[in-house]
Image (cartoon, rainbow, N blue to C red; front, side):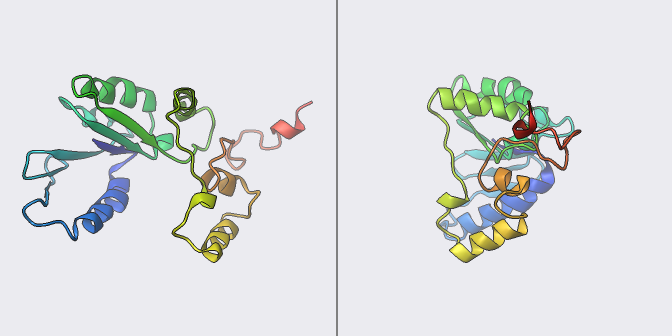
Length: 183
């Protein structure tokens, strides 16, 4: 299962990546896209199901069993607890499958993704990468990205590029109330 917030994200992220990955795939092994079921079906019977979970669509990811469930942009999935714990987890019980949550931090640390990160850290299952770890961008490309996000100290750059769990000041009810101004 590959799940993200919405169908549009699937079309913009997953399907172009699949096209690239399958360019060199021998035709005898190449999966066929089944738009009715929303999945890639391989000749050996394996399937990769794609679904968007937001706006009440978490149950669209239900199925009998799964070896791997990936939730991309998990910090932006509406009801992540329900999706991961009630929809995906039962599918892994008979397969010994895994659930992987991938995301930059959500715009608020109140999102359940933060608790999932802390749980993964406690179990040694958290992988943390920032723009500093990115090897496929030049220094100039990185600096241009940082500048376009408002500079190194902007909330957006700190959250999206350095994966800090911080409140987006543009969305805060009282943006002036920050940790450094508490008495």
